Image (cartoon, one colour):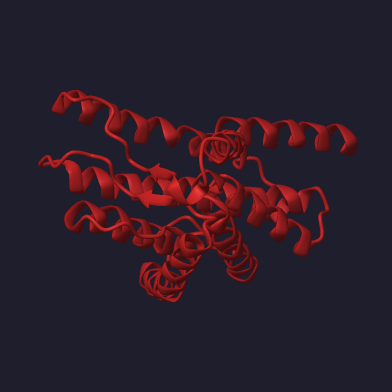
Length: 255
């Protein structure tokens, strides 16, 4: 029964990752190879939040659909996590198990803001270093035209990325790897490498930076068992990058 349960969990993890960030990691590797075989990485560009239609309201529709459907794997994760792991967990929701709730909003917000501040400046330095070394592409956080809805959509996009990444790559993956009896440092390393890998299309600098961030976030999660501060920090970093570029037009590094 134990072997069958582990096989089922492995299949579950592969399905979740195949529908979400594991798929993104595969595409990211292919995109990196494509860019490297065209020209030096220093001459390549990575554009996030691309416009999907020259017609304003069709573009808005596509953007909102992308955000909504990207959250479906998160819903799948919470569905899978509704099955209790231990007898004492019957009364806990899947949201409570990952610490993705509003039971301590003030503390989560403060921790998230602190994390974002601690990560933001080093990320910009790493981006600048990667550009100077030629291992990082130019990153354009927003390719959207200037409409009335551009900033709200960019904020929603940042929140989408934060929820998808922190819930799946940290909360869910650490839970499942723990059930596979992986040692904690190995599980943290796997989570961090996955985080870095789906940023590879931006170059090797973002891979390194996001992997380091992944180690920190996964380690913090093992201490607190809450993804909410991580979601707050990630959302703030991306909001500053996405909206800042949209308003001021400067290329910035992303966490």
